[in-house]
Image (cartoon, rainbow, N blue to C red; front, side, top):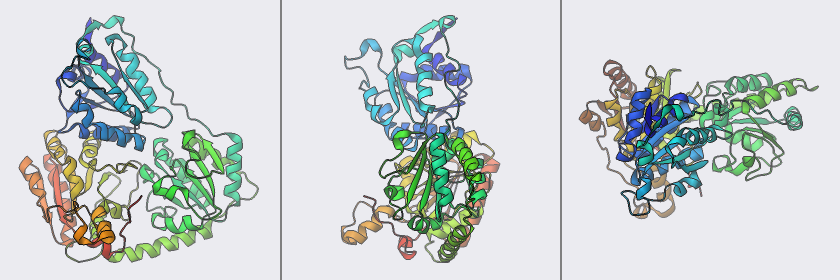
Length: 553
């Protein structure tokens, strides 16, 4: 039976277990939509290609599999570049399929013709074009294998229009099977033994739990290891929730104190980048760095023990080796000291979490939002100060419960991430915490949520400015020279919800935040439509709480 290239694309995705394709319509890729209908893949059309690719990124993160977006040629592809770059630095296996001009017209000035494969080479693990319909299954599965192997990351595949619409005989096509391994890589035995010796002899050890802990499904192994030896844990990225934030060993507010005193750091998939001050810890501190990617080990600072391997496998090895040591480590006193620091900081922070000031303080918003979180909530942080402060308050208890853009710091992920989260988990509460600035980037995806009956709740922390930039700018050059950082004060973003048939509410009183959030959730439960809760915040709240962050240069 004849089958066209678009159907071949959809068949490969269906074989991989992909349930949703994110897109914005374009003639170059219409055959893929046709194939998705036949293969039972749901097509989710967004309002911007960047949003489609962000949503596919979130799909990948939440499934620990491949997320797929398809965009049309030229500007459709370039619109998705930012999302691909974000996935690259977040180590997320996004497959972007880009349309292209027909082969016979390439090089002649065809509609939306441009060099696309080279564009993506610096920000993907693999970038290629398919010029023969028969090779679609072979090259797409190659791209998927590369995206999911080792350190995950995005890939780009260009498929010209005529390659997609061409028919071939189905019986003549070989669909690859068993084309990738799920085997776990264990650490070198000698490196494990050396790491165990450092942990046993340490007086002030700490554990950094990064995104790789999440990807390697190592939550149980992490918990068993740190509980067995009374080790303090500091989560990073999607490592949040791999150990519940309310666990006695998880002490995020004490991280600075711990890293200034530590003598041994066990880093589990945490890059030594700006978030870790490039590995500048206490003087004389020794570093055990575990990563699936050997090229990451030793970057920015010397490493005393480097272990290449799967986080869960390495933790299991360390558990056995440290446990078998003649001198069993006991860090109860060190852990208790850091728990005291954590409690002290939480007590000081609670003053602002319970503040009755108007406009509302950012930490009070986070405190009220935390009241409605439970294990069946997914929360997405998309903003600057309002998200940074909320991260100090929100009790994340499950792996994958918290998502943010990652180290690239890309704004605009909120609603696109939420689309994927709600589609994959229709019975969970999905909440986006936006700044008013970040909401403007992909806020029109509220329309997508309405069309697909997704009861997402978007909470906008509205302080009328790009606060993370404006406040340090004022501190550096004065208010009269702080430009390009103001937004419309007290804008009524909730009316956007009403315009599209959703629920919108503005909040100006601190004690009205939780009731407004519950009304929005109840509306979504009854109607399957999204909501916007627009919370008016204090533009000076960050300064008042003395948490102004300097530029990271």
